[in-house]
Structures are given as C-alpha cells and as structure tokens.
Image (tube, rainbow, N blue to C red; front, top):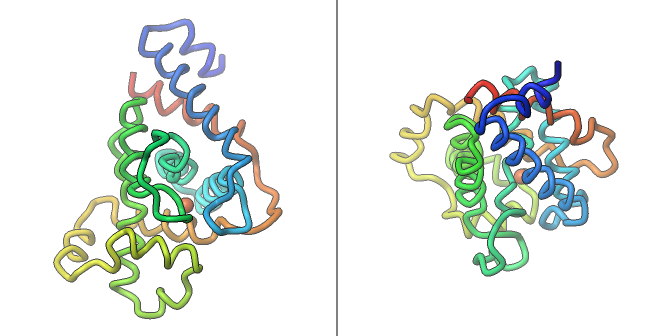
Length: 201
Ligand code: FE
C-alpha cells in the first residue's frame, strides 16, 4: 500500500500531512512560471535540479527534501514581504524554514533550509576564491544577506551538527542552474515527503 493510502486511512495527523504536501506541491508547481532570480532556469527547475543532485550524492531523505524546498521562501511569502531589489525575497531562508516548520517538517529539514544562506556566508569567509566563482545574482543577494561571516560566527557554524549537510546543500544550490537539464519531476518526491510526515506522526 502506498504511503498516501496509508495516511488517508489513518489519523488526523495523516490528513494534515496530506494537506501539507498538497499545499507545498501547489507552490512548487506554480514556480514553473517564476524565474530563478537572474539565472537561466525557473524556480521549479532549480528546485528539481538541486533535489536530483542530492539524490545522485546519495543524501538522506531529509537532505533531499531540504534541497527540493530550500527556496520555498521565495514562493510562499506574503505579498508585502521586503525584497532584495530584483533578486528575490529578503530573509527567504527564514520565511521558508518557518513555513516548513508550520507544515510539520522535522527540525532537521527546517534547519537545513534556514542554513543555506549561512553556508554561503561561511564559504565566502572561508575561501577567498569562492567569491570569484559566484554568479552575479548570488553576489548581489550576498550584500542583503549580511556579507561574509566573521570568525566567531564561522566557528560556531562549524560546530553545527548539520554543518557538512548545509555545505552540500549550498553546493547543489550553485550547481542547480543548468538550462534545459533533464531531471526527474515533482512526482518523484511526493512519496518521500509523505514518508517524512508518516515517520513523524
Ligand atoms: Fe537556491
């Protein structure tokens, strides 16, 4: 029996999970029409490429889901959310993380999503060559995101139990911008998302 059938036949939590997954899918499906801030792919293509890179790297399901959903804050925000000029929603990592927490995702997924900007700021601090490789849009958003981490902040980040996963996610975030790349579609992740909720209910 699929996880979907299992959940519908079960508790209120199960029905809540199905509702959350449907709601997230509506945002993701609509993001096919949205550009990924100055890059040659749509928001949906970016999300799917990031998730696929995580799968190819044999990442755990929470990390795959975080890769798929890391930019949901660009999609689920309120209409009056402050913007980083023409490069997206300010604090989209926090908006996305809170949204996912409310929907019932685990603390791990929430932290990974929140951490994808921290990871960028850490890498700029740690590696002088990193800045030179960043896209124009990413450089522009960095200014709004507080620039490079300081030493103390970077050391604290290194002690984060999800430190390595957050760096991996950041790497896929940078790589998931290839025009017309063929990757599995959204349906590929529905069962994984339901399973994530199922394990928590
Ligand atoms: Fe991204």
